[in-house]
Image (cartoon, rainbow, N blue to C red; front, side, top):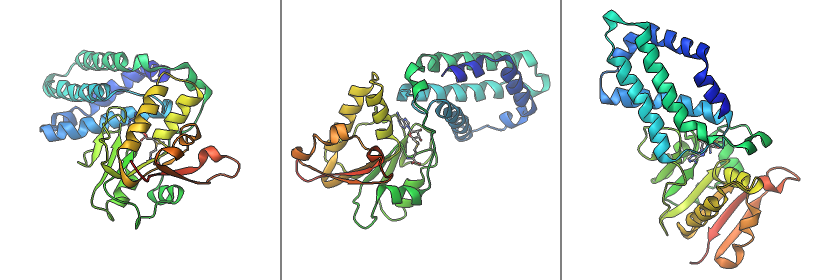
Length: 282
Ligand SMILES: C[S@@+](CC[C@H](N)C(=O)[O-])C[C@H]1O[C@@H](n2cnc3c(N)ncnc32)[C@H](O)[C@@H]1O
């Protein structure tokens, strides 16, 4: 997170933000309902998370920290709204911006990780059609309720599936107003036993899991236990559908009530296979 912290500490970027705010103060005065504050702070929060994810897609904040960042943007809006537009002082805006940035830095500065430098996988969101194709999802055979873990800011697959199925949900660290898309860290979401017909994760949960295996990060144990919790959350005949694969753990499942099917995506790179893990018995 060095780049982001550097950006937040940089005087020129601070001046630019203050200038932009001063030019748009009337706009802030117009954010005069709780709903508008909620919406605009969500937009600013998503912009900030997008910058963090583009810098290091493996940054992992807890739900408490996500909410902390979101609340800082709400506080920023309330503080700017409280300024009198007839008598605005550059120094007042500067103090608000400085405090805001200081608090953001407090949340993200501990999130740096040396191993991030060793792996560069761009963080992208993919079209729903491409995800369907890669994941080999047959809309006629997957069963509800469906949940897409790390569904992305635009939740494209969730939006497509909800046209065809009744109970479709998504989880992501991006803020989303849609009631069925949960603003949560996947570690903090509890996958209750025997609940889900289909759990999906494209280039998200298992991509981060792979990285924790490769670099032996502290999160490894959390990924193993969350993966097991996800499998236990499947109903009988329910499926966990994901890409990339985790052969280290899949190999241990065959004898324990699950059927594994792999689909090749890239010749010569089986790690990028799509996997369907089906629960055949408890
Ligand atoms: C590479 S994107 C893939 C998005 C989508 N599945 C797709 O294929 O278009 C990975 C997504 O995982 C989300 N993500 C990463 N870590 C997360 C976490 N700990 N909890 C929830 N979402 C997370 C990111 O915000 C991002 O939207």
